[in-house]
Image 1: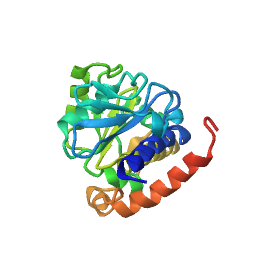
Image 2: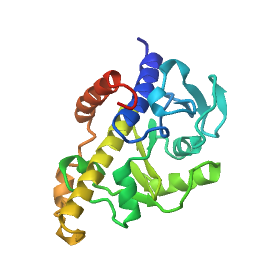
Image 3: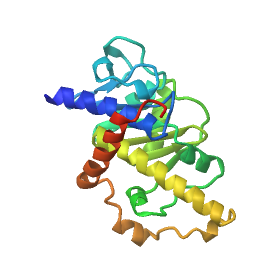
Image 4: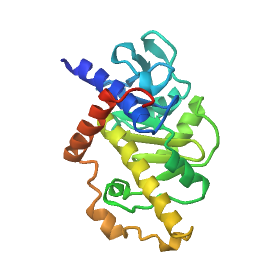
Length: 235
């Protein structure tokens, strides 16, 4: 399998992981930059659970469809403008994980409450504007909120993660939702008193900020990809 085939397979798997693990259902999408270019592989406009490595589109950072059959997802601008803003980014993931959405709507910033949350030691930005990212201008605004980070929570909407490759960006999305879900459970156990949640101090978070290291991503990807391959859509 050559490099392009591996990348296509990973993009399709990343999309299916989003659906299989409940980060998205009928909506959501993962993309990957074609190395050395300002173009990226992107799924057609359907559930990420149906992503097919042989039916991916190629778009550029200006939102132009360069090749492939079908219609791209309407929020292609999330991906296009992050790639335009960040030459260091090899993949962008957008999903609608419920725990993350809940945090944005109860006014709770993301807090690091377990080891995998250490990946976000530098903080998770929040994009406050309500609605979909269906224009270049809104894509640029989201990219600005992401800044140099790896994740942004979108109020009432979902999340966008960015990584050096599609495996890293996908695992970041999974870890962020896991972290948010734990935070919500702790908040419920504390009777809604956020002051009772024992989150990591900055020094403690720094000790576990390597949660997206190549070795950890490889192990996590092996698991998530395997489940995505065997679990039926919607199962």
